[in-house]
Length: 447
Image 1 (cartoon, helix red, strand yellow):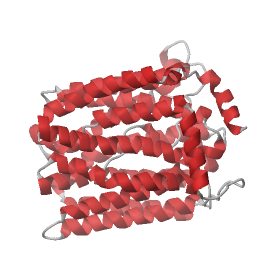
Image 2: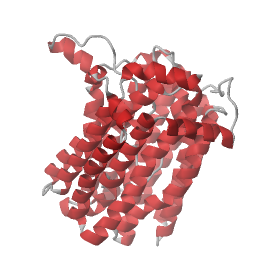
Image 3: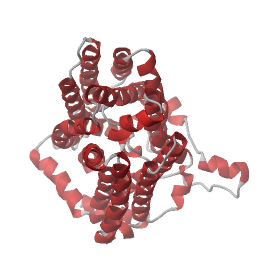
Image 4: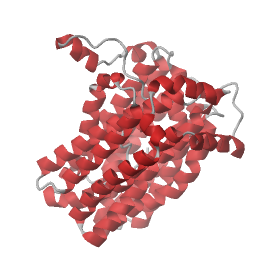
């Protein structure tokens, strides 16, 4: 996991399923069970999925600790939100390269081996952060090197990790397995940042980073106990031609391209995380910082647990656009907040809207992308949901340096809303997307 920023929605948790199709019921407890449907069967029935779930759960929690500690240390060393935002610049170039390569590798090599080796590299990267935090004079430039190395490694890992789950469980268990993966991510994003804030104050940065190192060790042990996940028999290997095939397919689908661009717009203009260390100084310091990072994930978790209603939505493209606009409105409210409670509520509402957008994006992807392109499209998807926050942190830091903290946040939220309207208007196929047409889209692509 890239330590400088986490997944901002369900899209990094692996493919999200369509909600269960059984009737929710007429009300009362029956309806509640339908909304809060969570099947633990895959954990009982699939040993390798259980190992992956537990290992990645521990590893993701550790990454959320580093996710708070790294920008906090950058702000402490520089006293500049712009520097915190520039950490994302260091991530962008390696991510642009490795996302495409990682997608092609996910369709061509043993996916478990790919995840294991990249997990080891990220463990070593965080180990460097531990050493840098221990020395008398920590180096700011080393934080940039580690952020770049982690981002590049994640670009290689993420497509293989996302594409592994369908090989570990039966097709009947896949929706439940994906829902469990989403829940695991959201729990980590809710619990990890507040604990990180407490740890920074209580035990210091070196020990805080060391917890992430230990979490990677747990994940590596779990991966070593799993069986191999070889590439599909029809794999064509890694080549520029294979990468180009995935790019051509994504470009040919306006509705698919629209999901990427709407999310990138929302994250570019409306992502305020580079400003969180500065915002926290107005509300209580490092301990509050973890609360700010966790607040969007609280809303995201609530949406994940009540996602049954999304099964009734057929026009998911409209859901993507409307939810992205709602994210922008939540960020505006955050920028206008005068108390910690108001800020947390605004961020939670924004996070819930972001998860709704993520659910509908994943539904579109899962319904209409052919299996033979899944790994390469997973790489493109990862680039879309990573580049927006990466560039957005820079935009937020620059805007704060020019116009001040509050104006930067409010302007970003408003620009998100305007950009979403413009993209939905310019890409009518996204707005008209209907899940009932998805089988035909997939079949045409496979010819």
